[in-house]
Image 1 (cartoon, rainbow, N blue to C red):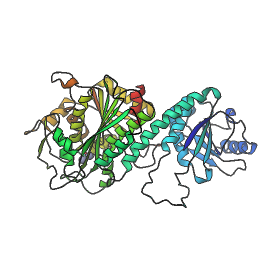
Image 2: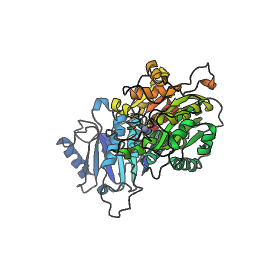
Image 3: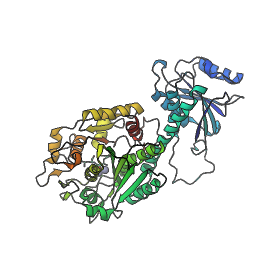
Image 4: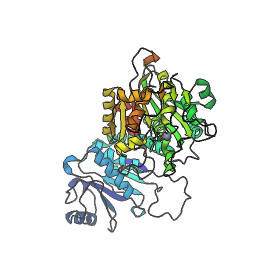
Length: 501
Ligand code: BES
Ligand code: ZN
Ligand code: ZN
């Protein structure tokens, strides 16, 4: 899809008119150059109350002689936000059919630049489908998502350059979201640790300011990445750690993002039940968030230093797989009693978080499809958010609100930490004592592996946040930007946090 900004009064192709609730006739500032018959048709629909402008609603007028129109609802007049414009853009995009053709002109009534840009953002975000495994169907009907679309955003001359810049920025961010979605949607026979690493390595070649380093299985063994190795060793596709460094020559502290990257989670020897196990291909969503965020930052020309660490492994049962009862030791030197091999995300992250300390972090954020318990607590509507720093947690929550990706504060309590350090044989255990508070005990476990500043034994712990995206990385039916599959959640949140937070 091509999105351009246009200052002339031409209407190319189908006209898209975003309108607030209660609009009874076509707004004056949208009338320029509209053929009389088209105006009459729109006014009839509005005055008859056939289109009420409700949020995310659309109506398509294709019978007119002088062209086609899609009306897009923005919701109630007094509270129309950029989020409503973004959702309306996405809703319009999903309503486009072959009959509307490939060219569109969007004309806004009395909208600020930020609102127009958000509408464009919604269209761009929704412009996604994952068709790589479908044979091309020449007769593809109304759902032909691949048609090249040319979208013109009509605006005044004064607004054009600012709108162009904002749309350009959103285009780059949407690329990051779509990359995260592509990685997540890829079936697990084709997406395995080394494949993720190869894609990262190839991807980095297009940018002068990004480096990707792969720590392969042999190196991980040598380096003592016992958590990563314990999870991945039972698979014929061996684990690895992939490190992204952007603008690494810049001196000083920087954000470090860490991702859980289980390309398939069978549970290991603590095998999962069969129902819906296919969904465990999404268990690398945390790493996809990190990779996608790097792409969004690179596309939008971010000039600061940022590091991403993705912990890639496939969790399989095998003769040489880790057993419940095994005690392992990872990079941090702390021992872990593995009581359930299905609680594997925290094991790979224990090494990723410890490794993060090498990059002088301003802060560390990890992303993980970590616990079913988080989905029980928050459903598919919000990510669970924990932090060792209340102010930082609030900053992330606010960055999420700014882009309409909800991250909900959850507690890090000493009692949960105690539960996870209360092993009779090791320093920590990877399972809580009972089934309650499973998302919190998981977070409390991770905290044991967040290093202190400069790894100073008596120093202060690095500012850290944990985002459990088990409910939000896929299955979020209320997310207008997404039809199905992986959502690419939090690429936008973290891009906002790093560039504007
Ligand atoms: N990948 C799963 C978490 C998950 C479950 C994500 C459902 C999305 C939907 C994780 O590795 C896991 O299996 N966690 C266990 C932890 C338990 C064994 C302590 C869980 O949540 O049941
Ligand atoms: Zn698991
Ligand atoms: Zn998992």
